[in-house]
Amino acid sequence: MAEDDVAERYESATAVTLGVTVFSTSFLGLFVAAVPASRSLFEFLAATLLWPTCLLWLNWCVLVPLTEQQRHRLKTVRRVKTALGSLGLFLVPICTDAMRRGPGRIIGASESAAAILVTARAMQLLRRLETAESEETPSCPGSPPSQLWGRWRRFYHMACLSWHDVDRVCVLREIEHQRHYTKAFAELIISVLGLAACGVAMHGTNFARTIGCISLSMARLLICCFGAGSVVFGFYTFDRAYLFLLSYFNQLSVHSIFGPGLWQSRTIKEFWRQWNLPVQRMLVSGIFRPLRRAGCSESCCGFLVFLVSGLGHAWPLLCVGAEHWQIAFMLLFFVTQMIPLQVESTLHIKGRFWVYTVELLLSPLFVLPLLGPVLISS
Image (cartoon, rainbow, N blue to C red; front, side, top):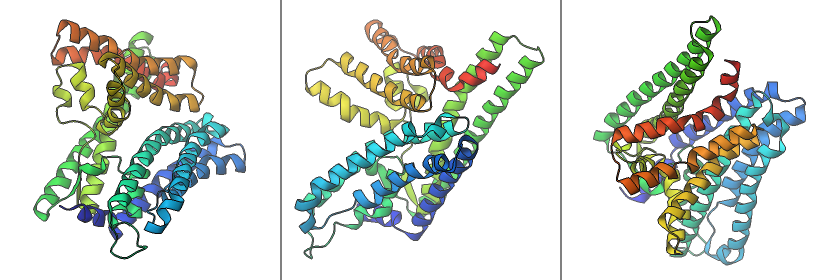
């Protein structure tokens, strides 16, 4: 299908309704979480309105197509405004005290993590928008670029309602539509059930520890394992939910954020190449390849990619006032991935048992910072 067909789906009334509904529902949850965390009306408004205001301003007022007459005059201004809007997304979680108390941490962690994704997406879309503007030859002087860069398409990507790659979206034919969204819905149900089962198991473990059925060390080990399962099922739930929504309502097919061979990976390198593909591609294109072209070794580039990824995951913990050990553990989880990578490269080790064992042994570094309060209370 042509790109214009994809853009038309994003611009449809159904897409607009879906975007507003998902966006509003997400921030309704943040409003609810901000109530017990805020000590004043000002804190409540700052915790709930500043960040979405920056997001909407960035999307609606900055990343807009320019007419041919405007490009020479406003191109630099648009770049500066994009940078300032992105900076605002990072500063809001830091400057709002309510995001470091109780349920307000949910807001702080969500907004600080989304700030990274939204900023990366903003830079990507701005570059694509400028390319489209430079290549397009409007039939009517002063007319804006094509519908390809409509507001609602950018809104989907900027708000992370669809953080899948722009180039990997296509329109489903009628014969494929029902089969596609039915499969996505079935996988979504399985993911939700898995996530719920892990949550129930964690609470059950805590209860068993309370009545003395299991020891404290065993309870912490089980909670850590179930927490790792919650992370995996949580990612899959997020992914399948948007696959289903975009398929059912917009008749669009988007690639999963996970590679098809993720769980068949026989090396650590293959595993990380299949995990969280949009972010992985951003890191490879933005860090790995430029450094390789500059003459850095593959090991050095790989270490820096994992370091940046670790900093990105540690940033939300820092914003919500996590303890130093939680931030350090999260960073270590990614940095230490280079050790098994070097071992398997040197000793030519392969096999799914190797991959699963390594990631299972390293998973506490990722899970413990997220479940710190739960483990302490157990």
